[in-house]
Amino acid sequence: MKVNRTKLDGVLVLQPTIYNDERGFFFESFNKDKYVEAGIKFDFVQDNHSRSSKGVLRGLHFQVNQPQGKLVRCTSGKVLDVVVDINPDSETFCDYVSVELSSKNCKQLWVPPGYAHGFYVLSEIADFCYKCTTYYDPEDNSGIMWNDPKIGINWPTNNPILSDKDKNNLLIQDMFK
Image 1 (tube, rainbow, N blue to C red):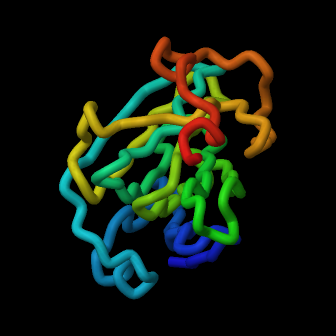
Image 2: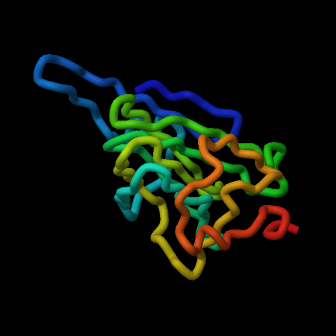
């Protein structure tokens, strides 16, 4: 497994070793020892799987009091995945990292606890899977507006399909005063 560090502390892009032959391919999608060696020293307590259509943007989500770490990957289709530093005391506050995740490239993204996360679907359909370090708590869940100008994410759209909840997310300046 190849581990690439990003400009955001602890955020990693992981490329598994893929074995291809005439029958198809094989790779380890999770091996605890290898992930611990890469610096991901968390136990995962919940796996999630979502399916979304082209043009859907989910995010930017995070949990306030019980932050979740997420190991994410796209198992079918293609997404643009985004992680935002939401720690006001960080040198990279409001900076973001974006990575294309797809069933073809098999990349994974490690989103440590304390970051906001979201993705935009680039293919007709995308299945998105993630392992979480804490349980989802709808009362603790929050979100930042997808097009927050202070963050300035370069999304490939100006008109994504959003949930009603995500349409009402706040700007980061209104969350961290």
